[in-house]
Image (cartoon, rainbow, N blue to C red; front, side, top):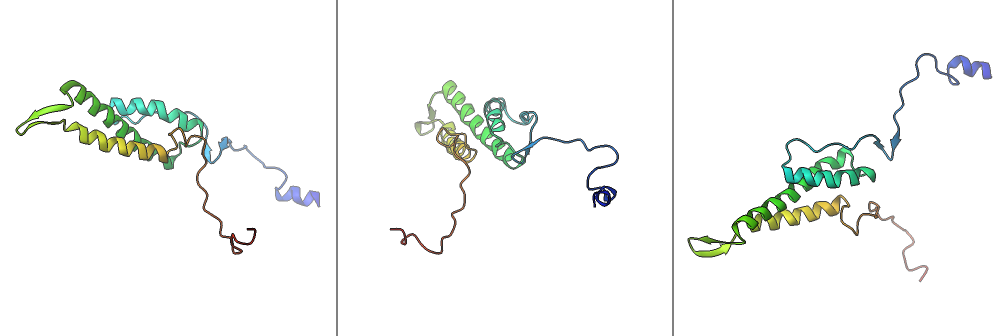
Length: 147
């Protein structure tokens, strides 16, 4: 029997062995990807802060890269708007008198978007240790049996 298995090639491979790549949790280990060139300086700074953390937790995959890019753009917009308001003041003179700086609305929307994306990426403090939510299993017996 052993001779037959050997002849069929189950116990050994002839020729050059394939190059193996270590896979951990479905993602290929290697180097953390660098920030895309098209990001603004503020967005790149956020990428440099967040990407290594996600990468070390095996959360930076091809599926989450676009979401991280969007998060970095939103975080960069928050900083850019803050710089504008710091330079021009939070209130500006308009035809109708003093009014909030136009960057205030942009900043508010970007903050909201950054917060939602950070939660989705598990970058918020209360989500860092959590695992992805599992779908609830249906129980045909119901909860009332053990009560």
